Image 1 (cartoon, rainbow, N blue to C red):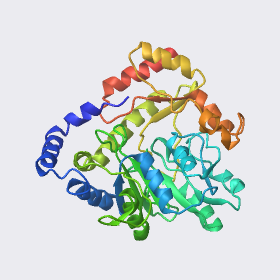
Image 2: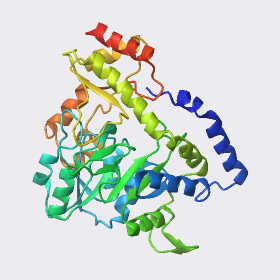
Image 3: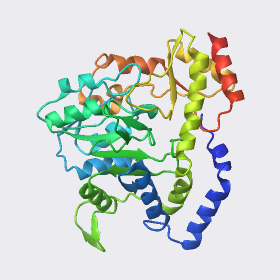
Image 4: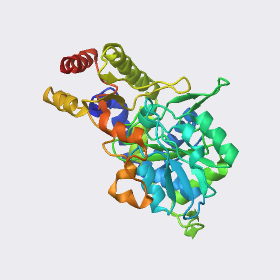
Length: 366
């Protein structure tokens, strides 16, 4: 599914040298390469960047910074990785689900206003699989109702969003705060855990940096209850090297996606990933839909081809979140997708021979 080692070999000397520099410096935390990487990523995104321990921490730090109260409602999607909702519940906030669009898998912005109540304080769109939700529409709704917008951009780093007036912004820099993960298989992946929070607001950036460091304003002076969440210098050094190649790696993913498109579009038994006019797609995952999903997955496995189901059960039907009060049938699109989606191999090192083998076997199955 993801050839992380193969990608590493293309940058081996640079990455090895960067790691050795950190070891020699003994500056392993909150300095050195961490600050260097934050600056370079901030320049790439044109926003403030605060790194942290992982994408889940990024979400928690974002909502801690917003000072929401227990019981406040946050509108989001039930078709996502669990972190999106887990953080809200742990903080005493109430996730309010809105179904997703069947072609893009992202939150259906046309349903958001129907879910707004006096307790609604924020909207949490998820840019799933590398394509942005309809942020221009979401921002208009948020402005109308005086809501905050926190982007879960963990799968979409580097994705360009295009506004109607021609303005472009990167995923995670469009709303009030954006959250990112450096999980190894992501568009920009570390060799371990890592995350970051993005914001154009200097006050929020300073607040998030304080919260990620135990709420510490100065040495042994704690201004707020915080947490311990930090990116270590070795991971930062690796990410700093890989950041130089991020756009190149995105183009490689898009090239692989075009191959899938060209060779699978004539199969009526499957539905290819939808595209929108307002967002580039950087293909953290290439996810098709098929009624015979489980049989296809098993067949591909017999041919040595990995595939994954993201996600096999919608969040509103998970046992941990039954207290939210939702039932089967409440979000039919999300529930249908859990039965039909299948992600094919997608990474920067896919070559034409591998892609031909994959698509030929899919055609043979049907």
